[in-house]
Length: 351
Picture 1: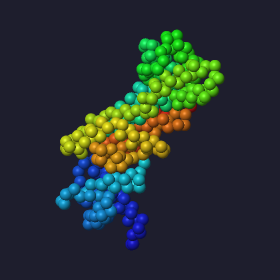
Picture 2 (picture 1 turned 60 degrees about the horizontal axis):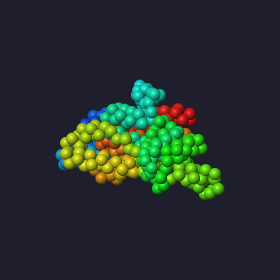
Picture 3 (picture 1 turned 180 degrees about the vertical axis):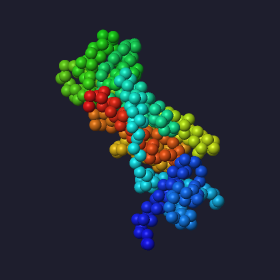
Picture 4 (picture 1 turned 90 degrees about the vertical axis):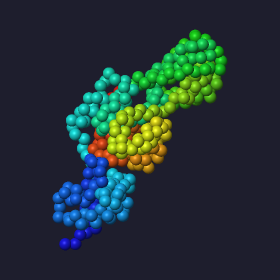
């Protein structure tokens, strides 16, 4: 009986899948005898070895030592994630567990984001991260101004979900306590309910109309808020569970790799910039090895799911671990956490 190309590709993909699954479970090179036992088919060990050689020639497997079995390459993982692995439905009990831990209504946004990261790290036994929005990307609920001197004002921005940011602003012209109170009343009466970006844009538009009866208040408000927000990032990276990844064999057996890993995790701004790029699309994004483009994390992979509010993506949640990870199961957990955060934030916003 002749074997069609599709039959051969199906067998090749199945063997690659079995090798990756075995390597993820054991962290040891996988030989043809183990594949043969797992395959439970009429394929002879010789045929399996030949297919493994072809997978190696295609760059999907490599042999660490002459006498050892094979391990997946970075390209092998990428092909597996993109073309081979099946979806792994999240068990109902785990969905319920995530919802119970993240949904409590008494928590503020900051607590929800921290809880989501900690829960994800525990569930996956990997490092977990949350790209959380700051006040800069949120709707202003209240602005408080506190005079600290004739030229210094404490500006406290309180956004929806009780996110708070405070900044000490140096003003060019002296300002009295009564003037500070007037500014606070003006901002909260006329401009509250806008995002920070829209708040600044509204003030800038009013600045162009110099006949505005509130011109003085507009000018001073804009000056203070621009200075306060100039150092406020749009997002921040909450990273935890590094001990889980350091304990993996890839790093626990090689101190140099562990040290490079920790350096890479410490470069939070670089990592945040890289991960942020994967929030533009929908669904879970997976980056493997050198695709991460962060020095020290070449032996890692990460996956991230977006979460949003009011139909807009405002952050992301994900995990980072060794390339040798259970991609189907972990992708489902990350996707479930992203969905849970979206549902929680949507309820707060009334969307």
